[in-house]
Amino acid sequence: MKSTFLTGIFFLTLASAPLFAQDAQSAAAVTDEELKKYAVAMDSINEMQTELSGEIKTMVKDNQAMPVARYNELYKIIGDETKLLEAQATTDEIRFVKEVVARREQGTAKIKETYQLLAKDYVGVASFNKVKKALTTDEALKTKYQSMMDELGKDNTVN
Image (tube, rainbow, N blue to C red; front, top):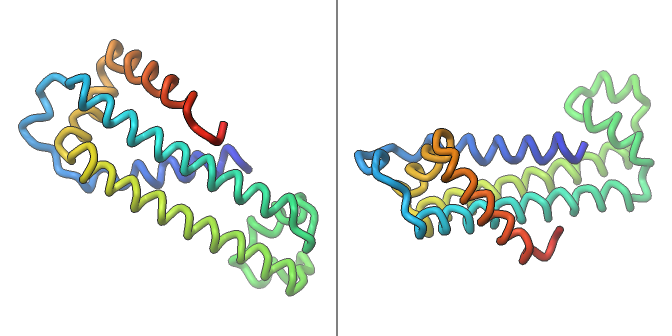
C-alpha cells in the first residue's frame, strides 16, 4: 500500500510539470546553482510525500474502526456502494475510510501546490524545465543530482 501510494503521489506531482512551457534556454547547460535549487525543491517534495505517507499509515494502523487488512479491502471499493454492501461494510468503517481518503486528497493537493510553487518561484520555470529535461539524458548530471539528493536526505527529519 505504501509504495503504491508514494508512486501515485510522485506521478501526480510530476504530471503537473508539463504545465510549465519550455523556452529557448532549455538547450543551455545546467548550472550548479540551478541543479542545487532543483534538488532542494525535489527533496522538499519527497519529504512532504514521506510525511503524508507516514501520517496515512499511522491513521490506518492506529484506528479503532477496523484492522488494516479490512481497511485495505474497503479502500479498494470505497466508491462502489454495491460492493460495500456485499462486503458488509459498517457505517463506522465507511466513515473512517472516507476520512483517510479525504486526508490523502488534502495532502496530495498541498504537495502538488507546493511542487508548482517551488518550480515557479524558487527554481524558476525555465530552470526547472531545463534541469528536469537534462536529467533524462545527462548521466553525469544525474550522478551529481543523486549525490545532492543523498546529502539533502541526511538532513530530513523523516527518514
